[in-house]
Image (tube, rainbow over all chains, first blue to last red; front, side, top):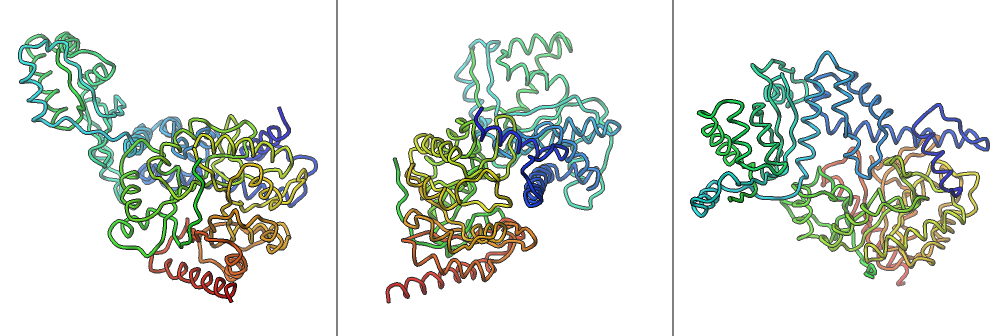
Length: 258
Length: 278
């Protein structure tokens, strides 16, 4: 290792940890300068977290959020070139620190996912009329082999809290959080509609179907799985309902039949 | 290799607070500068806004994460992503800072001071050559503001910059406020610094405000001070055609408050050029 590499390794260690000793040749002016860089480093990262997790900060309060942010930055110093990576794993930090309030970690995940969806790749959802055209063209093709490509999606779950209600209750500074439970566990699905990141709650069954199709599974396999869960009689209708809902929400990018 | 063509003009850093102004009205600037990393994304609104602004104004890509002084070399994935953006935007030029920001393990997201040694100069030049080859264009590097010098320093910063431009063919983004800030912090004469630079390699000038104190901090949160205007007046006539820009990154005012500062820069530059012509 060359001496510049040694210097940079030692300087970074001093930046990240106040307890690291400074080099023997350093005087007060060097230590004062280092203090400026340390302050810049921490302020930049904490402000990046504050701007990504505005609702989470409103939920837990400014002081508790700041403590969580400092804790996260100390334990997870960023490695990537984009400041977005500072936010990676902050939902898990919140889940650990606010273990008695599981909605905090879930809300932090949702804010992170909305942030990611905001700059996800540009693509267009399959319009309902295009879907009909595909179906007509396919005629008696092999529908069990149908495959779907979704828009870039992020999903999380299962969760118990009503995230839709919580999200809207924290839209503005000073708003009071509204925390209430869902009647059954759900999953959260995040994607981008035009330029706007959006999210919806899904049942566990639907979330599992989206995951299986996203992983390359076929429509036939989804229907088979559904039949095992809810019975042959209702599986076909439920599969059709889910597909219709995905088309209507604009989640499907491409479809290939048989 | 694309070489930056001299461009005489006056511009602003494009900040979120001013997106609507730039999209909905005619803003009297000759160019805008954007932070490259904010647009090195897969898609979405940021790139759409940049494309719309680019349709109206020349754009400069100014980065903060190249880490040209990293002993471990450059991040190839970062360079590839920057190349994609540069090919898309076709900027006047691409710039970054003479500094380091990361080791192989961590990224500080701050512009950290390089030891001004011959070893660091060799490493910086190797990295600049790699970056210029990958991006297919000669780059500009900005003199950073700094809050400490290092005991192992062998060169003055202006000597380092001069040697760097000569060895690599890169150009300079002269941040006049940073010269002033570092001069205050390290006790040198800013005129010596300016005189030591190869001014023919300067393609752009940054002007900004700073926070005074025992250590002067480059905060970009206020108007340009008189001392920095004086320094600008002393150098602008000695450069060729350059792009002058006001940088504001905090306490960002509405455009009607910022544009008069740019007019002030125009007036100073015009006066300096008249004096030289006379």
